[in-house]
Length: 331
Image (cartoon, rainbow, N blue to C red; front, side, top):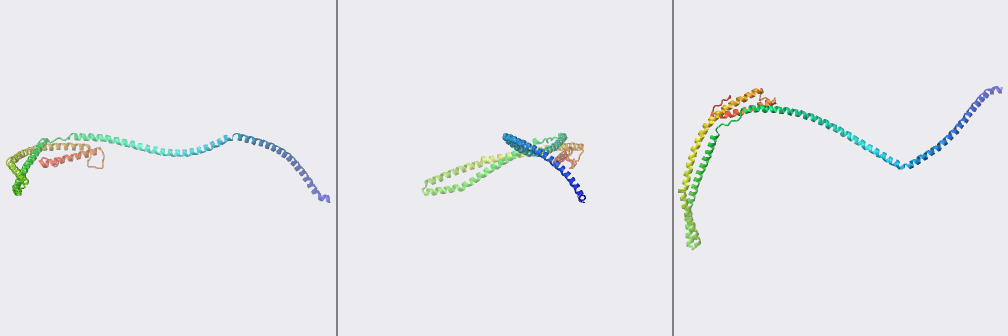
């Protein structure tokens, strides 16, 4: 009964003993492997220490070179940082330059466009020059042929002015002499009275001075009377005769100039009619309206200039017509 009750436990014990034996064998094997691994670890530690010593020896040997390399490494890093900043700056400058280049290219295109427009304007200007030259060569100013007569009139007008001034000068001289003579009638009695008073006082010096002044005054009075009756009157008479003479010549020259002026003006009026007709034909050939302010081209400018010249010529013709006749309002 005990055997039966313990049988199951006996079997389990046997089984556990077998498993324990297996485990112990595994532990023994592991211990052997551990010993081998520890032996290898010790060997490797020795090798590692040797290697570390060698490395330390090498590092000690090349410590200066390593220091220099570290400095160079730091310098390279700093240089790279500076290069990076400079690179960014260059990139910004590149972008700005490209912008400037683009703007310059646009300006060049605009400039080329302007140059082309200017060339067109120059060509138009040459055309305008040909038009105006053609128009005004045929209407070049021609003198009225009356300049000689006008110069004669001016010459005799100057002569009349000069003769009139001579008459005025002669009359002024006579008036001055007459006024001076009138002073002697007052001055001489006063001097004679002063002489008597001085003589009475026995002031011979004052009396002599008064006597001399009386003598000088009487001499000057005779001289003034002589001039009034002689040279002054003759000069006045000659000046009046000369004035009358040049006045008659002036009237004669004015009459001649007026007649010749009328003839020249009538010729001028005829010339103006021809000029205006020619200019009107030029405007008609241009085929534009000179009063059209909306169109700006060489033809319009040329027509405007010629139309302005026509107005000037018409004004001249009207002025001559009012003075001499022969000008029609529809000329």
